[in-house]
Image (cartoon, rainbow, N blue to C red):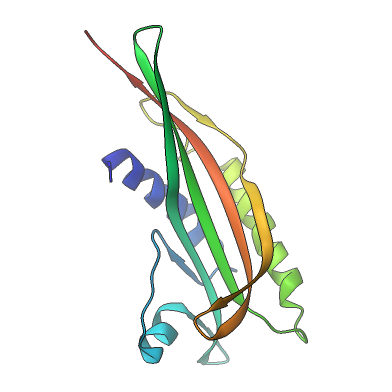
Length: 159
């Protein structure tokens, strides 16, 4: 993975990590078959003990490159995908809670200039919520979402 992509993942992770409602934010997919490790990596601490999954994973879903344009630059459109898992609890209305978290993420990403201000020309596309639904996280039924973020990287070619 390029240094540029790694830097973007770290910047997105920092933005999400500053949102207090999100518990575990990782810049890649994480998993373990060991239940104790799963609890340590992904479970949120409530009332002094690990009680529910509140995990967010960021990765690059893909990249499309175009160019050369005007014989001097290539444009790479990187799609970063944020996957969110929150343990389902009907009594506590976790679906509404997940939607609040999604809106906090969207607002934070839209308003954060760190991700977009780098030496090369970067154009921000607004975050797109692709999916809000349900998924299993191992054996745990969760509210689930996917938020996509496209960022253009302009690489100038010198001859």
